Image (tube, rainbow, N blue to C red; front, side):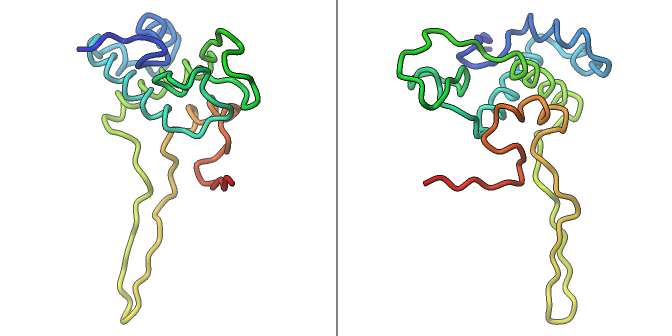
Amino acid sequence: MTDLIVGLNSYVSQLDADELAANRLFAAAWDAATPDTKKRALFTATSLLDRMQWQGRPLAPTQPLAWPRVNERSPLGYPLTVEIPPAISAATVELAMHLLASGELPGGPAVMQRMLGDSMVMHFAHVSDELPKHVRRLIEPFLRSSSANVAEVRF
């Protein structure tokens, strides 16, 4: 299995993830997981978070992950170093723990269809966010749009 490298394939190291999880109440799935399973959960959580529409731009155009980031107007090469915000690292761990506990990737809303005579009625049983609320709250200050249900139009 590939090594976990912060900034290359994860937003948090396994050691830091273990420290964050040690302080969480509902961490039984994390505690029971093998080191390889924890690593996979962190890879997956990073991958899911990496797809979000973040404010700013990546620090370097060649970096493999969306973080670290800088303001859109920062000149290339400045600042020389930027850290991944603690909230992003914590969100990665929280999402990894959620994935281990739920045993599945986050999904979209369930669509219900019913034929009524010649008409079809379709509705969403629930409109769910791709991310758990506690993870979304951690990353909201860094997102272009605070909700998964808000569209952004860019020109």
